[in-house]
Amino acid sequence: MAGPYGLISVATALAAPIASSRTRRRMVRAVRAHAEGIVPPGVDNPELYQGARRHKVKRMVFASSNHAFGMYSVNEKLDHGAAFRPDGFYGLSKAWGEAMTRMYWDKHGIEGISIRIGTAFDKPPADFRQLSTWFGTEDLLQLMTQCIRVPDVGYMTVWVGFSAAATLAQWALHDAALLSASMAVASPRVAGALLVAAGAYQLTPAKRACLEHCQSPLGFLMSHWRDGPVGTYQMGLRHGIYCLGCCWALMAVLFAVGVMNLVFVAALALFVLLEKTGPAGLLVARAGGVLLLAAGAFMLATG
Image 1 (cartoon, rainbow, N blue to C red):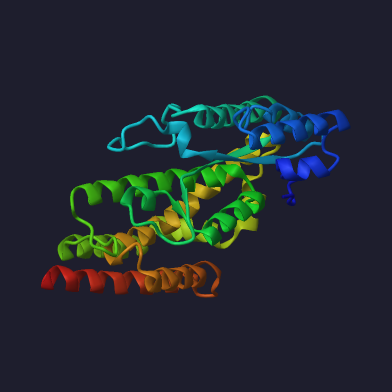
Image 2 (cartoon, rainbow, N blue to C red):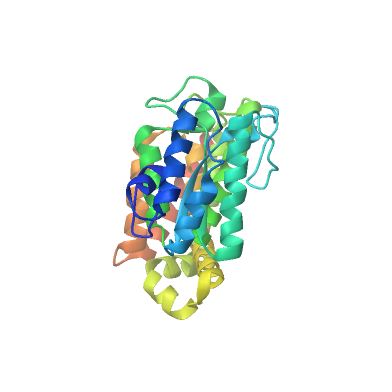
């Protein structure tokens, strides 16, 4: 698949002139070897990355796997900085691929995004552990598309870190039997406290400052521009922090109403859209804060 950043996969590299004829022949043999189970996937990635470097590709997306960490106990909670512990040659090849992605960023400035795919089913799996790493088909497709389109990877770093923290919180609540079937906190008082905290944050100067930056991404770029790959990463990181500061409390509300509550998820998406793009975004944010405070107070009083 090819995108605006020159993103390539093995399939398009075989058909496109990103590599020499000799390199393409090697890759064909490598793909056939993978299909026949002769070698694990990923060991031929240097050919692909060298072609990307020669043709000035700006970004590569690597399909990694949770098998790169498969030897950890299911009871251990991992974050994005956990050391590799592959559970076989397949996982070993994914650890190799992630390390290569990092090397080409450090040495050549080619942005790299490694997606550790866990469970990819059309429907939600029944097993909780699989559900925690589940990608629906459309979700995975959208994630891949956004990996191509996202302006810079620094922005993604912030949200990946937040997602990891939210997942760890979800696991901890589940292990403590504090989640309902809809993945909402079982205690009305805890849910009410979450709503009050989120509502209060909506009224703070920090929320206003972050919202102003998120409402004008062009203005942010003009006032925070940095040249080069490192500068691009720094801009994305800073902008991501502002956007996280704008939305983290609203995301936390999902633990109060249910992570699997699709009606609320749709309502939250609409609210964030009005907050960030509407002519009265700050007023919308404050009105939402008042509603959350009222709902939280009600739950605390009746819980």
